[in-house]
Amino acid sequence: MTASPQIKSKIVELCETLVADSDVQSAREKAEAFLANDEAVSLYREMATLGRALQQKQHNGEEPTGEEISRFTDLQDSCDANPAILSFIEAQDALRGIAEVVTSFVGKSLERGQVPTEAEIFSKGCGEGCGCH
Image (cartoon, rainbow, N blue to C red; front, side):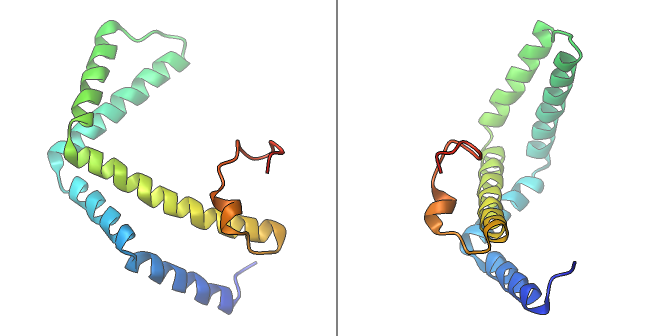
């Protein structure tokens, strides 16, 4: 099933609002500044790659060596001290948060056939299916 012209129009309107939002623009600028910083990108990529390799090793029942753990910890510390990386992570979190709010509103609207209240979306329950909300 495809969306009706009215739904498509509202989706475009939402997207226009999102890209014009100053918080979204700021987050995108931070992400783009990080991506333009080759040194920060390389450091972050090395830390992420090693982290995945260590997780895979553990998943396969192998123990990472002390040297591997030490290298990963050093990389994490370097990333934590890098303003470009910290700004990028902050930007990712902001954009992810906005996407989650949009997804929550749309999902709950489709599930229930009515627009949810802000309290329903923004309340911090213990999770789906718990019966507390």
